[in-house]
Image (cartoon, rainbow over all chains, first blue to last red):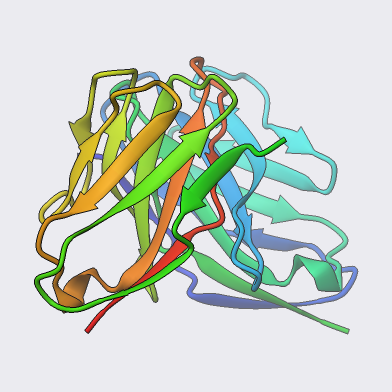
Length: 113
Length: 113
């Protein structure tokens, strides 16, 4: 059974600093995809970044990058130069060959001035 | 550009009542998903569909049924609502392909008294 673990219920970061949100996963499938989503207090789910299991390079999208360590089964999200608007819940998710897409329990990030 | 639309947005039910949540997408996506979101639990997959006429169980399927009679619609049914089904329900869809991220609806808040 696939499983996603986010061990940080909450994180604080000062504006303009970088922050890493942890995500580990468990799968025996050689082909899988990893996603990060942001959920602001307004409730909508916003796609941030994707990493495929066969991708050789870490994914990047603007200030977001995914630190993919396949052997350790980790897919941490790095947000550079944090902004007040980054305060939100962040969810890691994984898709296996079965096309199930499973989410972790999330990390609440708070950015302070 | 409607994207993914969920109806209704809010509903209050009494224990034992039945109801159906409708999810409609206009992006011609193959895959559709129903999740529930509860505090501290993240998003949990209820059922999903990989194409018209197909459905599959997710992590927490008990007490729910689904149907995908048309490609653009994915219905979630509660035959006999229970207080434990009080939650925010999200529908999502995605295209075929490894990098297809989920597009989410705005959520439906269901309260069962």
